[in-house]
Length: 146
Image 1 (cartoon, rainbow, N blue to C red):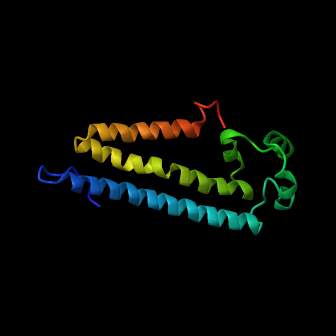
Image 2: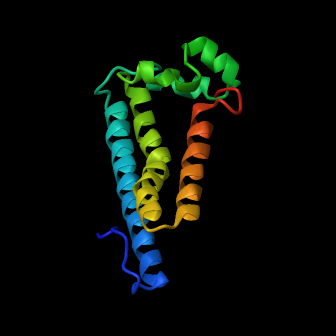
Image 3: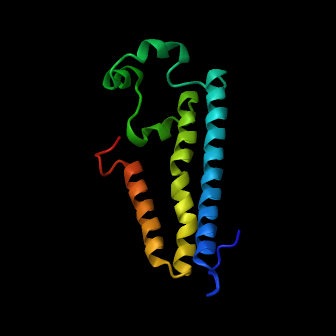
């Protein structure tokens, strides 16, 4: 896929189509990777390939609890604390979720330089603003952390 700056003769429809194709291709790849990771890590959890933080047989009794009580009883982390438990079977599924959630960020990163190179600075700025907003949301800084 060619994302080099177009010549003066290129129509705006051609430019838009190339940007949409690049964004869509990267978004699709991220979605497929994320979903694949979800399937593999969930299968690993269900088939007990990796030791879980919370054993699957205890979940039915814990699901009805308020989140604060659940976290207290299980030692479940908040925010980005799940990264410390990535070796546990039940937390490995978070990796697929993180990939799915970041697919649009990566897609915007892919097209922003091409937009700027084509002189479409407003669209490049919007793409960068989207990246900043999504990263701020994921960080939990704006809402005080999740």
